[in-house]
Length: 85
Image (cartoon, rainbow, N blue to C red; front, side, top):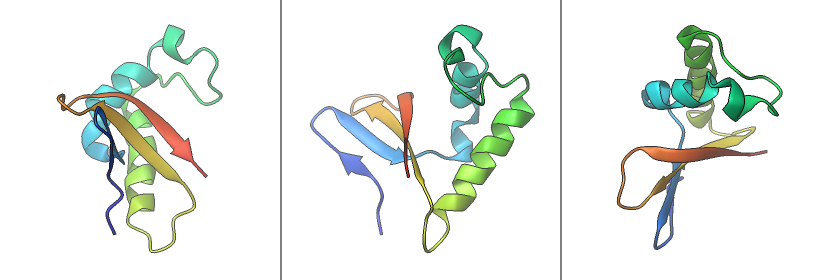
């Protein structure tokens, strides 16, 4: 089953460990994360642990949650992510 969703402008795709650098840039920024419960991440290892958990969740037959990267159609780097439970 494909979990990639596309519109004319956006692509929603599974967040993955390959997004480590981009996620850590966001997740370690105090200003970006000041209203988030489990952030900011102090180390790249914390971000890696988070993404490993997300990557493993996508491999399950029955997912408990869905964590997506949201990108603009014409760009490869993502602009945000979202969680569906």
